[in-house]
Image 1 (cartoon, one colour):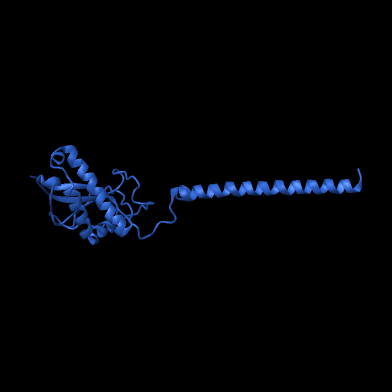
Image 2: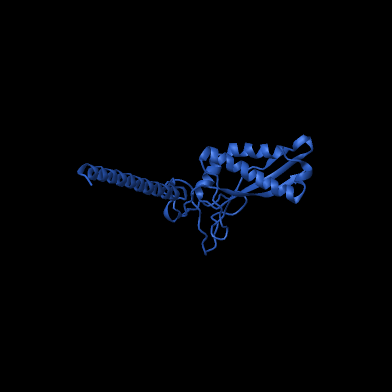
Length: 203
């Protein structure tokens, strides 16, 4: 083999080696990037969300000790509990066996005409949350838009449907969604698990 052919052969091998190295490095970068994206999207290693806002509400772990209310009566203010379990967002399913519930009674009752003028509904409501006192404060701070959202939902109800147990359950779900929508818009966090009737009159 001539010297020229040997040099050409060495150059070809060198170029082929460089291409192979670039391809290998590129593949490794793609794999690492994919793994990094996967860790980011799943909330970090061990499911932690390192981007959590520290001021965001946290879940309150259930205690073995029974809760002793500071005040009693229908108008008693809820205790502002301190949460310890951070979550990615307020749509994370909550295990009621693990976390402490707080009931937030809405001060005034609600009266609204039902759809098509078929009567009216009057009710008192209490909201349930598994999150800490920040959600309670958000509810109090946004009481006006929350009240408006509740009245809007009530005015769309059909009297015949609302008279059934299933209709009442649907109303609970609709009210929970409406209240969370207000809180997400105004406070960037919902946190209301359910709405309960403290009194309910349909006429």
